[in-house]
Image (cartoon, one colour):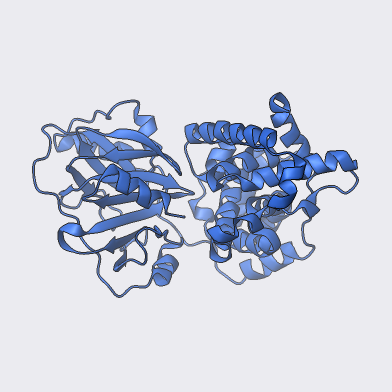
Length: 232
Length: 186
C-alpha cells in the first residue's frame, strides 16, 4: 500500500464525480449583471518602497536568518534585524469596544478567527482601509491582541528584531519573536507612510488559510502556541 | 484547450464589464469549482458555496493580477468560501460529519476496490484540517504544488511539508486500521 499511496489517491480522484448544477451559471450571472463591475482596489505592492524606507531610517535591511523569501511566506510581515536591540518597555494597545465580530467581518470581507483559548474578544476594530481586523483581550499590561488580515505579499507590519525563531504549530510554520522589538504599522490609508513605531511584546506570527495572524502579548511561547492552536 | 492569453483576454473583458466574458469563465471553471467545494468539505452546500464564490470573484476581478493563472486564483476564493461555510455549521465535535461523501464515488467500480477507496476517502477525511486540505488539493483535485499553495494561501514550502506529513499519517492510519476495526469507528 505505502509506495502506491499516491497512485491510490490519484485513482480515487478519477472515481470521484461531482456534478455541476444545471442552473449554476444562470444563477451567478443573474447576480453579477445586477452590480457594477468590480470596485477598484488599491494595489499594494510596495515591498521595494519599504526596503528603501527601511534604509532611509537607518535600519539594516538584513533579513533575520534564512532568505528573505522565507519571511515573505508570512504574508504582510517584514522582519529586519535591528541594531541596537530595543530596550523600551513594550506596550500592547487594546482595541475599543462596540464593534461586533460579525460587523468587523463584513467590513473587512473575511471572517475574523477567534482563538477558543481566549474566547470572545473584549475589543474589536477594523483599520480605516478595511484591510486589517484587530481583536484584543484584557487591559493594561495583561493585554493580548490578535491582528489579522488576508495575506498578500505586501508588508503591513514590519518588525525589527534581534532574535527570532521558526517553530511549528498546528497551522504549519510560525515565527516567534520572543523579546521586545520595534514594530511599525503601515498607515491605514495605504500610503507609504509609517505610523510611529512602538515597542511590541513577544509576538507569534503565522498564516492560517489565507489569513496572516499576529498574536502579541506578554506571554510564554507555550501559551502563545496554545492560543494559536485553538484558532480554527 | 484554453490558452493563457485567451483566459487573460476574457478576464480583461469581464473586468471592463462584459458579462458574456464572465459567463464564459464561469462555464469553463464551474466543474473544477464544484469539485473543489465538494471535496474540501462544503457537502450539501457546495452549490451555494460555488455560486457565492463566483459572485465574489467577479467583484474582486480588479484584485486579480494580470499574468497569473486564473484557475488557482478562483479556486482559492472557492476554498475560502467552503471553509467559511464549513466553520459556521461544523464544529470540532462534528468532525466526522464533514468527510467527503462516498456517494461521489463512481458506482461502477468493483466492490472490493470500492471498499478500499471508501476507506482511503475516510482516512483523508480524518486528517487534521491543514493536512486534509493539502492532500485533497494535490491528489484529489490534482493541482500541482504551486497551485495548491495559491489555493490554500500558504507558502510552497508549507505545502510540501503538509503533503509529506499528510501522506505519512495516511500510511500509518491505513496500516493500523483494518476494515473490521474501522466499522466501529464510523
